[in-house]
Image (cartoon, each protein chain N blue to C red):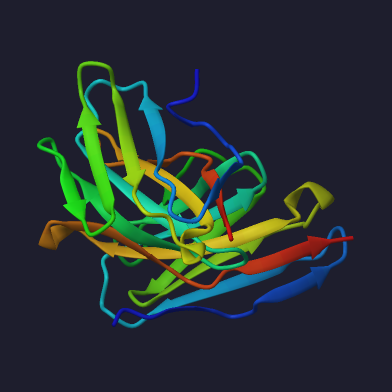
Length: 109
Length: 114
């Protein structure tokens, strides 16, 4: 089993739709969680951290479920500019980072 | 803004050649990383460094070596390039001592080995 798993997609959604991605992790001792965004042919950039209590940044909401060992990213009112690959990142107890393989999102006009 | 630069955006090398990929960051970050990214496999860690002259193997170090002679510079070396090393190589840096684990990435080097 991979340490961090994501549904690769692609997710094709119309503008204005709400879309959610999940990311599961295998190490129950994992400490920190993040979502990164990677545009086509560009480097990954931090989108948001994921806190135990859940957190929101505009149209984006991130949540952590420790019991089931997954994190989620919800995007409301999708924009064309949200089209990208979304990578989840998990930091383990030894502070090593593990990236998921990414979920590809395309928002259609 | 943190800036991480990589020496080349695109590189074409022949099998057996020695290849150097350079990465420089300008924010005095302690930690630097080299990843390769392949379709369906995501980012895989090759090597990382916590300090000058220190290096640690990542998940896929075979066929690679690294050098960190100065804090701002982290080099990835392919001793004898092979076609299965054709990939996108990404360098990143971070400063965890500040409690910030955000990784800042360079623009990537797309290496093709023929």
